[in-house]
Amino acid sequence: MDLFDKLQCRPSPLGEFTSEGYGYYTFPKLEGPLGPTMQFNDKEVIVWSINDYLGVGSNEEVRKYDAKIAQDYSLSSPMGARLMTGNSTEHEKLEEELADFVHKPDALLLNYGYQGIMSVIHALVDRNDILIYDELSHACIVDGKQLAMAEKFVFKHNDIKSFEKQLKRAHRNAKPNSSVLVVTEGAFGMTGDLGILEEMIALKEKYPFRLLVDDAHGVGTMGKDGSGTGTHLGCHDGIDIYFGTFAKAFALIGAFVATEKRVVEFLKANARSQIFAKSVPMPIVKSARKRLELIRKHPEWREQLWKNTNMLRSGLREIGYNVLPAECPVTPVLTKGSTDLCQLIMRKLREEHGVFVSGVTYPVVPKGTVLIRLIPTAAHTEEHIRQTLDGFEAIKDVALRDVGAELQKKMTA
Image 1: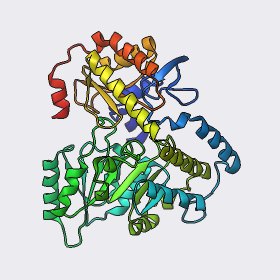
Image 2: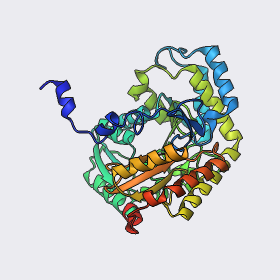
Image 3: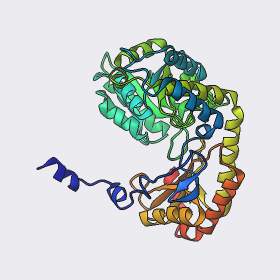
Image 4: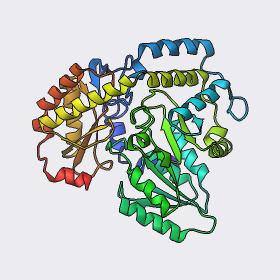
């Protein structure tokens, strides 16, 4: 059978949305300068779907700095992979600063978050090893474990009994030269709950393993100094390999992994996505250093983020919405209904109230469930929040119809 003909017949849960819903439900065009308000379909909307948690992407000092360094260096420099011709003092300084920021001995800069975590997982384990991961892990972790040659075990989301069961299984199956790598997230980006890191780390005494934490949503936002979910939970030292991305709080492209120096040295020579890819361009590296400097210098940005998050959540709950008890800024609103209801909620908020939100249905969440995910940022104002709450109030007769008390139990059980 011809490959292209077969692709037309291959089912995809997103297929209907990427065709009929293109440009609106999928691949929407948010245009104009990045910020809490942007243009959508030629209208100004309040945006709750962009992970610029600290408002760094719309910060005027950052915008001016970015323009200057792009002019100074161009996006071409340096050319080549870092292993050959793409290294620089600026790249190394950024790695030193990132390691210091997240309280780890050393760090390695990565081109992208998604590609980076896949490559790190692939490099760390071999066919003799065992990889254990949370069932709600982000797609990048799922794809990374697919690349890995290790034996794989999965545990129920944030279920310590299920996790320990898989640890026992791993050690029963272990060969003399087997190692165990556990992968989870610091803050889960869809549901907003935190990984049970303290409980997991406590089991290291019984079942030796190394812990890799993808803290994409936690770096810059969690912990008293922004150094992540481990700091927030008081167990950062128990994280063996800390992974962070620039795509959230830094509002930039790129990522990093921070761990012991000997592991960083290993990854420099074995992370294939870095060895065989062009180095991160100099303007991105310089901008990441500037953004990190400002994030450390302005703790009030995190304070404002949390103030806005709490105001939004309490307002939604007062109206009557079922807001999941998220522990990071991600604010998931659950209701009961079909894909049609999800589309209706998004359309009414966008068209009638100037509020841009994103929603998901099955297979991302259980059948019959609609999840509207809002991402508060430090750049949102009280007026943005009030207007958004007014919009949710106006549509609640539609959004909350047929919502049963069992819904939260279903999602949190």
